[in-house]
Length: 115
Image (tube, rainbow, N blue to C red; front, side):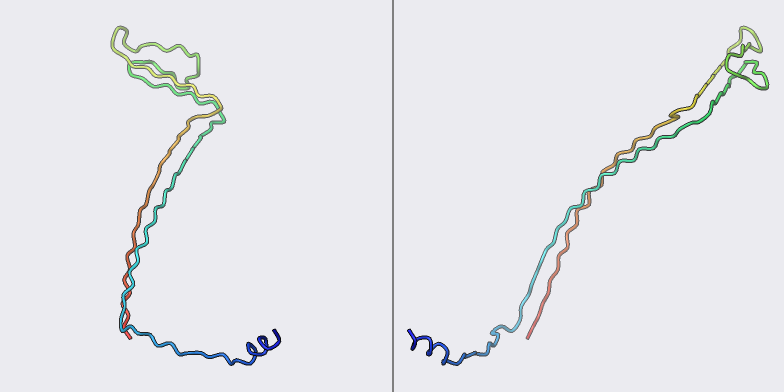
């Protein structure tokens, strides 16, 4: 056992040079990727006061209309249009947008080398 250990320690390491045996080469690669993006946009608009609007045709609308005002036709018996809107404080409108985007990409590369 002592002699075996001495032999292993006494033997010098030998290295051989490596010489490539090719003259040219080509490396090709392809990389693919997929990106998926989902966006959710939620817009809420709030009103913090009362809003009262009146519009129409052939309707007698006083200078400063208020909710509960009695309106009369300008020409009785003729066609008319009338719209009355009262908005109180709270949510005035809500918009919800959902959209998805998918991006697929492929990259091809070629490397050519010679010696």
